[in-house]
Length: 87
Image (cartoon, rainbow, N blue to C red; front, side):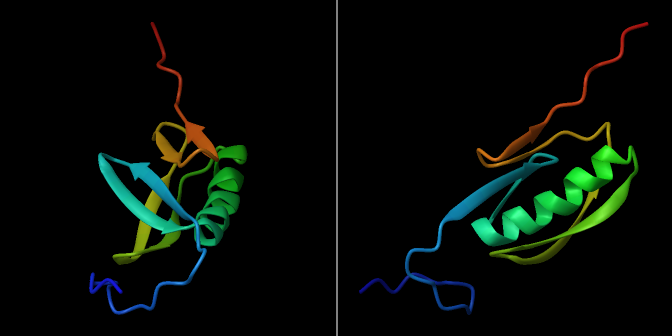
């Protein structure tokens, strides 16, 4: 059995992890948490709004600003790459 640290939480057998890339940082979370984050983030983008969206990851809770102009990626589930406006 491995003695690797788990951040004080017991690992769940068979839990899939998802890597969220945002602002040059990477956050590892469960697939369920990634899907919850993504539901809220997609609604913010659909409304062309800007809001802080909660993300619970292995390092704890995080509030990420979601807006049309901010790129982020949620594993293989979703990638938001805003178009660069040309003048």
